[in-house]
Image 1 (tube, rainbow, N blue to C red):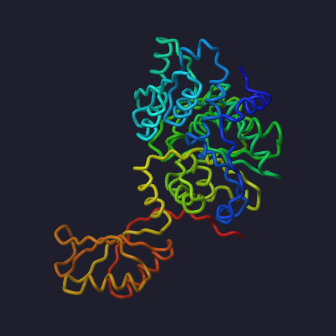
Image 2 (cartoon, rainbow, N blue to C red; image 1 turned 60 degrees about the vertical axis):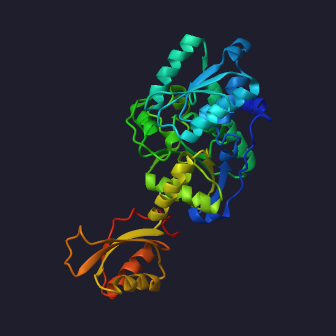
Image 3 (cartoon, helix red, strand yellow; image 1 turned 90 degrees about the vertical axis):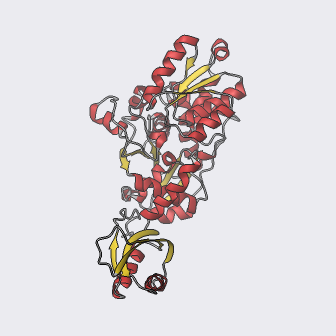
Length: 415
């Protein structure tokens, strides 16, 4: 069944009071960072932490009574499962979710807390779906596809309607792409009401299923690698979603893991919000310097989810700090004598840097026996400060062996 603009309008009426109309006001910090007027759409403020509630609730509300009684099932890495579990509990609809084994523990636990039956099976969403289809046939469950069900796509499209109401003079929408249900719904709503607004899709470089589908002319399965944007790690986009989105998405951009990590850090600092990798992907595209054509424009960023695993968050922030040049690591070779280490730390302090950790290495070294290698982890301001620190240490006669740093993800200067 094709999805139409009228169905998105009806979905919006159906969802009234059931989902949050999330804020979308200009962020001065992000606007300065991206050199345009940025309006973040805070979908991570939905009750279960993601936009998935819109599609899940729209699908549940249209189920016949017998299907509600038997229950629903879905394959999901987490957010669609959470949305179904939450609204299934509200509507007294039994929910079973099949998650890949890599699904974040926090999402597994929250689904169970909401009363859903959670089954772990397979390494990918595709593997989990095979098991979910088997269970649907065995128990008579209704399968609710997380990104290709027409009712789900229509529900996600309500974000597009809200954006047009909330952002006057909107020039572009930057939207994550996983299975393509979100961007399909949003693009359909936006292009039907205001065709001149650009829709730009962002996918992780470790899972480029949408661009592969564009190249082939139809959805194809692509290999995936682990990514911080686990919610976007869908090896094959949905057929319905792709058919809607292919002619309505103006551009597709791949983003690297370092850019995603830095975007999570930037959003925590600027917006005081914890956003998962999938939600941070739109900002990552700006930080990688790939959206310079939007300078000065009015741009909506879809921050689609905030369900990042707390055990991962600390590592992501550290990785972002390294990519930003605010934490660096190098080896200094100093004289192995009293006062040698004190001279090193004094030199680091004189360069306005702060020591986080120091490790001596005497046994496993090729340096002469009168010296010692010291592995230094140091807090700095930025990449330029790192270079200045190394220069100052060398000027003091301290040999520095710099470790390879990730490339800076800062925006290029405004012309």
